[in-house]
Image 1 (cartoon, rainbow, N blue to C red):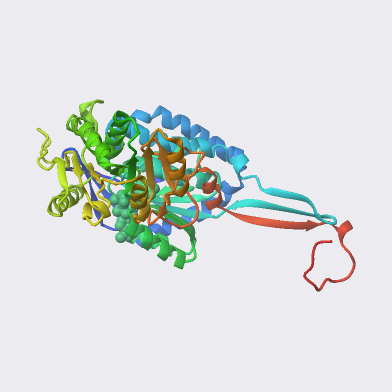
Image 2: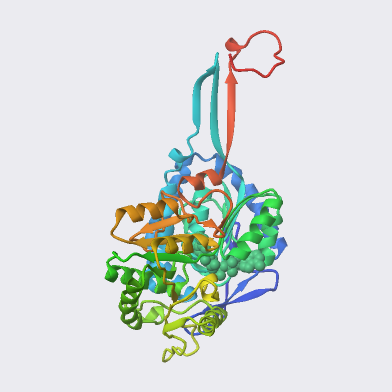
Length: 499
Ligand code: NAD
């Protein structure tokens, strides 16, 4: 049994708390490693080391910090296959999907290479007689991030790449379900030239998270995960005086207008609903066809596509569409929700409940499910299922479809499929959701734009990556300077314009 470690002060360090979590192989159902769960003391040690390492890193000019990231990109590309394999082994997603997970993180690292430009401040020449005013963006100090299991490469990189580019030290507490890739990433960064102690990985659960939230030296917390935990972390972190951004769960609607290309819409729904076994915060989990005829045509197109899906382990090659879900508990929760859908009167058009994969009977595989005639009061509509279950809510009109997406408590992503520019424009303008696709089912913005939902999908002000991340990981200092030649004699006692 492999015993994983933390990565503290430039070295792998064994856990000292005596507490461990099992890391599963979701395809076989076997425990493949034990991950240590850090105590508050172990977090304290990492914070102390980060605080010592940070000033020197911040003092390095931004171009030199960017060069470390540049080299890191090379190393990510060099080790892409190795990273993807390690990721699939613990998460269960297919190899091409795992490589995509690394790639979408890598793209944010590439964006952060622009740090010298992005960190430039503002300057006003002659803000008053002989007075200049300038602002600069300075790092926060020691930052921390808490990440979910579903993107173990991408989301850590979305956090630590901008944090490091801005001159901060960073402590990452990755998901205890798939911690190996984050440990590999910190090794690669140090190979690229990052000084030890600037990025550390401390594994753990609630105890480690609470220690990060309460530690007075930590200046900011980034969190991605489920909404109840996001809400908890946001309130506790803010109460401790930190800058906090938390990204939570989702229930993403795709609206299919009668004029949409129904083959394209069905293809898009199958990819966005079942890819990664539905374990994506930007997965489409609700299809909303507008009009009975559209709904009938859509279901007719969807069923054969869903029945053809290949479910299997990542080792079975590139023609597998999706793999197992992450744990036995996740599988149980999904099947319980499916049962609730049946009990509450939805029509289960594709039933994956009896799915079994020969040779992998103990794996956490879940067959694809398609529900039709779902109503907004049902649990399968209200709750995030996070599994290969697509629900269909039939809407009588465009306004009704729009209203459904707007009334849902989550607001991460949404999409509309139509050929009508007016409808698409109206939808993009009125919808109260953070990321919108027009004939694009999973509208994850690229690295140089920002990522974030609305409503219960987010707690905090600034988005992830793009220019927002440089704002989140720096604070502004503004200097007003007057040289002796501009000074007048005598004290000034009134607050007045600079003249
Ligand atoms: P999770 O909330 O269970 O765990 C996320 C992190 O929080 C992990 O590191 C975990 O160790 C920690 N954690 C768990 N329970 C905790 C507690 N009681 N106190 C303190 N820390 C705790 O989420 P998950 O199952 O790993 O990930 C799936 C969820 O993440 C889904 O809801 C999905 O929609 C969401 N997600 C959101 C986004 C987004 O950008 N909005 C992106 C990816 C995933």
